[in-house]
Image (tube, rainbow, N blue to C red; front, top):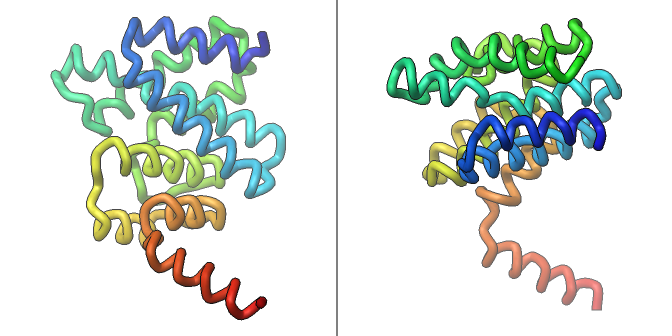
Length: 180
């Protein structure tokens, strides 16, 4: 099993029979990987992004215990030390751990996003949170206009949440007729 596979298994054990949390980080990981590859990140930055996506919500358990809340500000406060300990245990390099912990400690901060890995992590987390929280279409549009910057992230957002299936069907039919 590769190191990321070991990390995923470690997070599954960490969440102790909580399929909702496991499903969340796996979806964020999938979107982050997809967007990172589409944006042609360097292998090093792609690795940082994928690891950060796996552990981004590691602070939730501690936040719930300590503050009785999983609010983003508490996750950002409690997550980095937990991520650091887990990544050190799995022998990830210190430089990588530092950046991953920075991302874990900022993934709910949407100002001063510095780095494509940070941008993509935020977008991937939003893509999942939109579905899981039942975000309204107007809110989704606003987030898309103000937060999303990557081309791939914008396409996924549009395809999942902003396209009108009936309108898309009409466009496809018109194209068929034009090409006949």
